[in-house]
Length: 547
Image 1 (cartoon, rainbow, N blue to C red):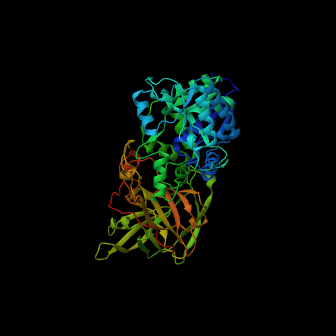
Image 2 (image 1 turned 45 degrees about the vertical axis):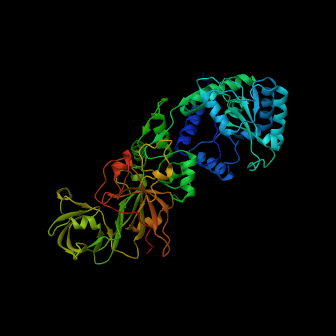
Image 3 (image 1 turned 135 degrees about the horizontal axis):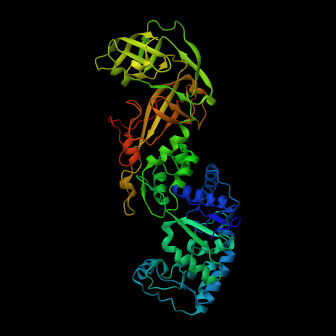
């Protein structure tokens, strides 16, 4: 039923939390189809429950939509229509399509489940209107009441068993309107009416609302407004992930995460801080098509899609763990020197940067332990060298390696291709390489699960490292690849003497590590779900002080 130039979609978030990846799918799809049909996208804040809503959440929803590249054609609030909604409710009460009920909440819930009519269901229209007036005033009598639609208490769809459409909220001010209103409509009543009033033609929402579609159409018919086409799509569900705002609130309140933008969170800010690009998310969503089937998805598909976007455009650098071993090149350069090298060997548009060389270089301790006397290895972007003597202490820790260059050697003949950094202590960039485990231990959380039983309280793993001096030029949000370690996003820049640069590892969707030194976590568990605890028994760490 879509007509070019006349399609109007809407995205109606409740400002009770930050947008998560499920909301992002709804917003992106509504925006996509509005633009596809040269129509309009409306942003409407469903601000009907002041006990949960904050201005902070509304501001960040606007911010997140902008990050997703979404520019709504208009912005409104359900509260803009509160006066009109009260008129419609009074009309329904006068026509006997609704009634005021003072049944206690638990009793009402039990009666709805059993299909038992309320004692208030058949009271007079005059009494309903009187009680409605008390609700609007917020009187002690009215505060005990709610308004229920008069539909069918025997309906197989229990959503249709006289649902509540209005209730009183007296002790919490509305973020925009203060204490002006005492009675508030709920989403099921307000949404269809406001959709019709604002000219929405297609209400696109996830299939979790399918039981409420019948109620949506009933409301529009009851008040005499034109019908709106509902289009459903499958909700995004990922392994080891919860999208419930209530449960996400718990993580924030318990300080298990640092806030709503924590990279472990499935919020828009969280996943983008971890390195997800909007283009990858959009393509991932569109590839799912119009399916309404609810599937538990693995994160690897999304991150593999993301890698396709970032790999061709991120510059390459090198970094070595702070416990690295020194290779002493007896025929190395007498003084450190630099020469230009490509930032990306397959993308000349990224330009060049200065690669520094010295007669002492640092390599990974894990690599050094695998080296043997007399072995020829390749130092990436330099050439071959021959390891003459590997020196170890009593604990098997490699202290240093005596070596000599063999730049004419065949790099194809060596088994080990090692990344390295020049041992220029005053010029290297101190870094924290930060990786994250899942914050939910169960692959498929169930609604009845207690969140405190599933929470992974220690899920951050840090590695202190020394990186290429060039990293000091990077800015927050820049993305790079560290050779043999993977992709990273700059979370905070280096402040000399105060803090190390923090680089957050971007998952790449692979179930195997890039190298023996690339990760502390099991990539397969991160990609496919399950506990992703360290493959080598590593424990959560805190950042080392800046050098």
